[in-house]
Picture 1 (cartoon, helix red, strand yellow):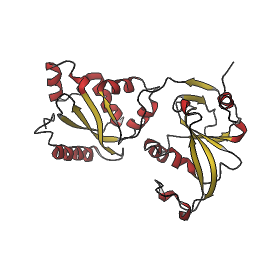
Picture 2: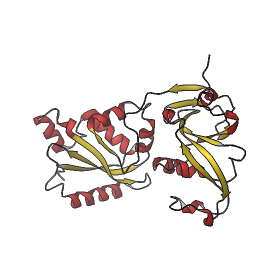
Picture 3: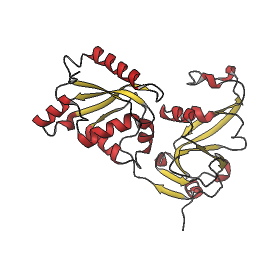
Length: 280
């Protein structure tokens, strides 16, 4: 017997008749930008029409493989207003969206289904263009994934040790949000040898962005960097002391030369050629 999305709602005490389902497509550049910055609520709140009318809850998903959808959050609908600038909440992260041409839905995130966030995967159906649907629509549950050890909290907060990064890279299904976010951008990153504090500044500008470059580190442990190779020859387990973080996220549209110039600037600022692990 198939498990349906409405079964999960009923178990949680939520009437599917009161729920509108939303599926955001990460193939849309603006959607992906909002998602990668953790602004799903803001992206959902601004609409061309009042999709929340007659519903108490919005259950928000983002696109997965094929026609699947991955659960993001459950929101309570507190009201809706014209998205005129006078109605914009304080510190709203995208004021340009208050253009007066649609509505702003006042949403409150609920913890009712938080155990399923980024874990529950459903079959949205062939009509993925129909991105808002009734909660009573039959949606088969495809999977409920294991709990992530390392939730993605945004680029600025990203700090991971080598072994943690290895798990993230090698478990694309479990860490799909990481893979989506890291492959969407180029950037300048920092590797710190936590045994002595020495740092290495690098850049990622290949097709798969930061994800592609960090995958090389997971596979080789040194990413082809001369001084890191030397460290590993002296101490083969030294990579376990490497901490990875992001110094600056850069758009995919930027040229490779521009990325390299920004990388050079960080090397100058942090003196990683003189006192760190950069050799050029």
